[in-house]
Image (tube, rainbow, N blue to C red; front, side):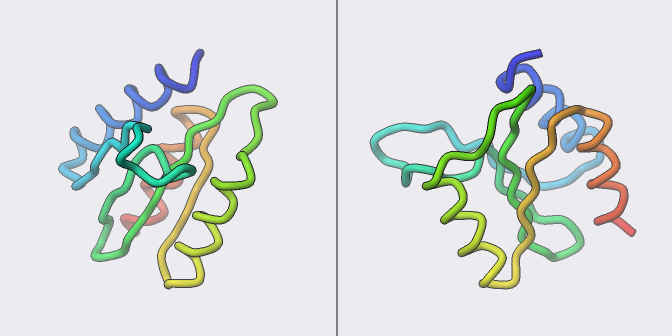
Length: 93
């Protein structure tokens, strides 16, 4: 499965759970390394950077992760729809 396909499936899941989420498309207008999806779960800012296989976050993505966590938000890097659903279920409490 590609990262794009994983992202699409995860966005559909968020929608089915009535969770607010914004899909961030990389362009000249978004900051380099901005997470793929930004969401709000139980009043908490949550970001997702989707990866598959051996793909790792790029240095600019790691910087965003640190900034989000330093600001009190959550940042996850799920590699499968199953892992993503587990994260969502934990956050929903």
